[in-house]
Length: 505
Image 1: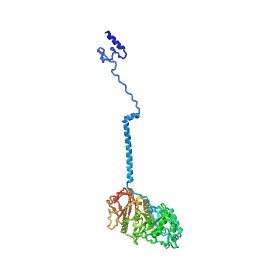
Image 2: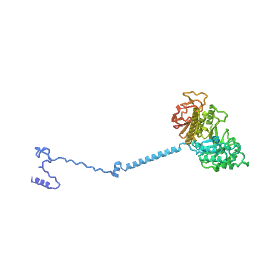
Image 3: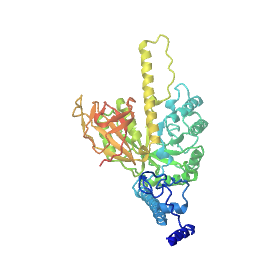
Image 4: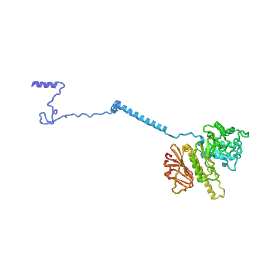
């Protein structure tokens, strides 16, 4: 017993041993029981002490911690590979697109010379000069209208009637009596160049003479004289036998001496026969002026005009740069239609002098003039205004549209039907052709006959169905249109710019 008590005392005093307080209430007891297990005893201390809530201090992740969260260094390499793959794919697609654009067929622009882009205006100066004024007064009246002609879109004047028909054009002093002296012609040339108009002198039907005759200056000296005055070229006829190949070779050498970029000197040949005889060497010719209508002493009918136009549209020759003019006598109702045709054909149009597009002069009414005369004057002014507006619209459209300058040409066979008016069987058909350059297309429709014609909706199914009016002979077609609902009025010509690219074969 003593040993047990003594051992217990040692355990109590021994460091690191937990004392056993048997008499301490609340330790190792159960609620309701005391040391002896009697009722009424209580527990004064909790069995487990709850741990405090942890406090989180948020801070940015470091690089190594971020790599660990993102998957480690391996994920970084995968991400770099994906970014590299994206950029390689993008560069490959860009290179493929460039290669497709570079290798795809597209129109090749052939640089055009100035005479291939110019609008020629054949003018006999005495027709513009006041009848009561000759000499210097008439020349001044003509010079005042040169800026107006330039504003219409005219680029080159072909001047006729400057020389005495009985004299040689190589004789620079042989001016027509209506112009007085040589100084008047020089003044006209200087004013034309100042207005931005090039000048071509017309030598047609003039006796070229013999350059060896002492009465005339030599050909080379005469040509140099006119070229020094600013003349851009000369026009001859294919029937002028005096202009042999030897003569024209000499002319070509002189032209080269005065030619500069955009200042080339040219030779224009007015063709009246099927073959350019004796000008077999076509390299000596720059422009060949062809007539759309055959020469005639009578007024051509609608059927004759339609046949001539269709023949030229189907048998065009592009061996030499063409220039189109009307030529034969056409009915007055077809004059505007022929103007539209000339301005939209490939080549350089050569328009004859037209008093309707001349500068409008103030009309002074005589005292006591009737209302009928006043109405006629108003009608005449409106007619001139409409003609000038059509001419300007066509010339400006041709100047800014590549398809009308050097676009391809396609003649379109036409089938027509009439909705409200049944066209007669003898009525000339509608003539149509297409000018195309890349994705740009112009459709030109010509109703030569006196009856209205409606387009068949099934006509030319490969063409776009809609377009926008560029111009018309009546200058009253505006806005967008649909081919299937279009009807052409008698003697009407329409130029349409198609909305969508299409093809026709």
